[in-house]
Amino acid sequence: MAKKMGRPKIEVDLKQLQAFCQVLCTKEEICIFLGLSLTTLDRRIKESTGETFEGYYKKYSSGGKMSLRRAQYKTALDGNPTMQIWLGKQTLGQKEKTEGDDIVAPQPVSIIIQAGIWPFKAGHRSPRGPGVCV
Image 1 (cartoon, rainbow, N blue to C red):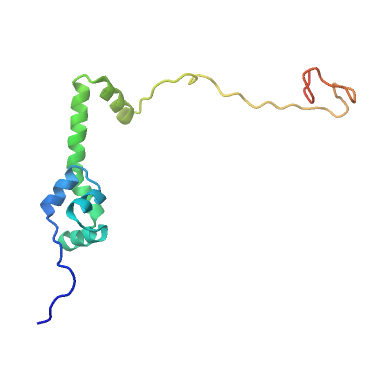
Image 2: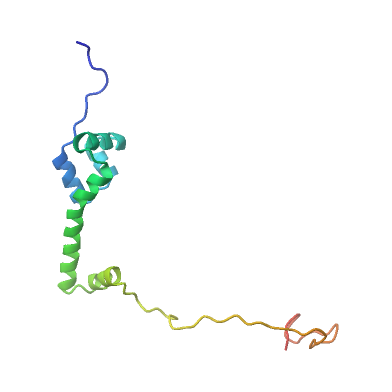
């Protein structure tokens, strides 16, 4: 029997991986904790589940997102004004009215100078500076 070469295969505990996904750990954080490279994590998930990391993460992180959203909503309903404002902006599209929101942008102006009609004689300087019409 031939002796296997290389390092021993690192197994990934899928229950532990699911727990990491549920608390919204990043792929990099999971790899650091498990002592794996990004590509090894991808391979182990593919071998165990047939899914990509992205698909696996999406499936198991949704529970964590729902828990976080529920906690934020409860905090807002309990009267936290900061959370109420933040959730209003995020979910209802609300925004703060800022100074100048009601100002209408200036419209462009066209100036037409007819040939032969010029307000200054040659060499005349405007009291407001060169090239400024009175």
